Picture 1 (cartoon, helix red, strand yellow):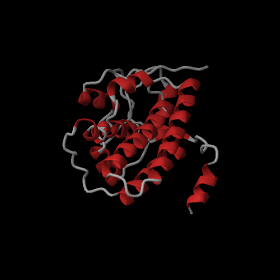
Picture 2 (cartoon, helix red, strand yellow):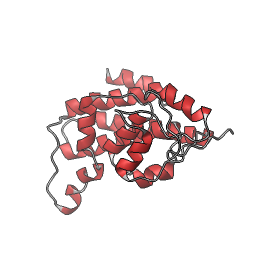
Picture 3 (cartoon, one colour):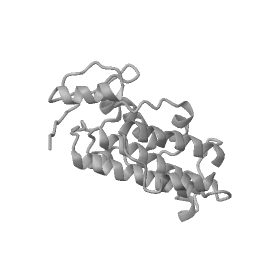
Picture 4 (cartoon, helix red, strand yellow):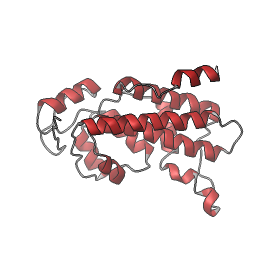
Amino acid sequence: MIRRDASSSDSVVERGASRRGFLQALSAVPAVAGVTHRGGTLTALHRRFDDDPAPLARSKEGRQLSRVRYHRAESFFRTLERVRCGRTSDTLYLAGIVAQLGLSAHLLDVGFPDDWCARHIGLRVTKALTYANATGFGHECADMARLADVLTPYWVWRRPHLDGEPTPDNGGFTIEQIQPLLRALLERVHSVTGHPRPNGWHQRRDDRA
């Protein structure tokens, strides 16, 4: 296994925020500060969020875990598709799981350690999307960004059923709006990672037609 570590506290690599550019930079030097993202760098994101630098290291194990996360995201999306008249909070809770699993698949694939993601990103979908786009995910969708804000952190959509607290603002999203946004997100994950579809995916798509 070839392993290349990268600390985002070292010299900046000035590249566009494309996945290919990011991975080329990661492979070319032993320590990479990141890629440009909306005028900043991955280092700037660490500072903005007060995060420890992510020791980026692509590996076979990371890619395998990435594939598992993508397939789990597809599985939860299938559950979400079956939701027709449930509570909006249930839909949003499932949506948060789908989005976070999908974004996690990208982050793991480009070399973020799983334990770093658990400590510094957790259930915050907006933060996961920000880090993903800073590392070449390339999904600059305004509606998905707005949904990510609603889903951050997505556990809040489960909590009202547990302790009777008021339901947070859902941003006006409906099931009919949420599903295509998440489908587009997962299509992007599939495209950039190159992971195969889950077993039976085509049959399930045909069954829904």
